[in-house]
Image (cartoon, rainbow, N blue to C red; front, side):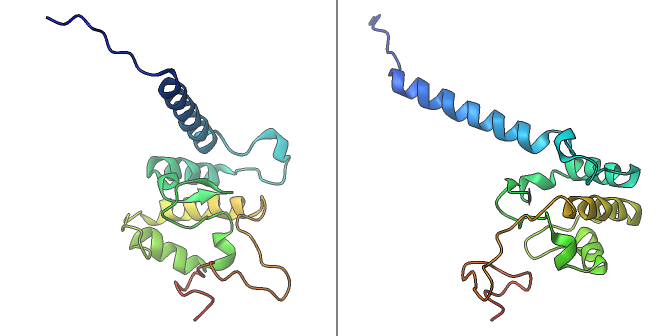
Length: 150
């Protein structure tokens, strides 16, 4: 019987530890409460918006979508979605489906709460890069699903 014990190289332990730290840091940032006191009174959640935040968390929206760049990578950043889409369009997407988004079939009161939450989020700032005046971002996919509106 061979009693030789294998050891893991130290660099593997450091890389693994760093990845675990990054995972927990991102999890904390994504799941931490909003708004923070540093934001002041500009973005205060009312009762309906707070219900929307809880629904956002319950449905795990941050797995695919981002708010201010934090969250998943499959769906678009929803920081300013209330500027891009009408309320009817948001209701449809939360009830039926989006482009790649599954149908959640949320009841009307829950859809209203999520939309209220997204309206408050919209007040907190710009979530995506804006092109300089007169310029374009060729890699940006507009809400129509077409690149540069083509």
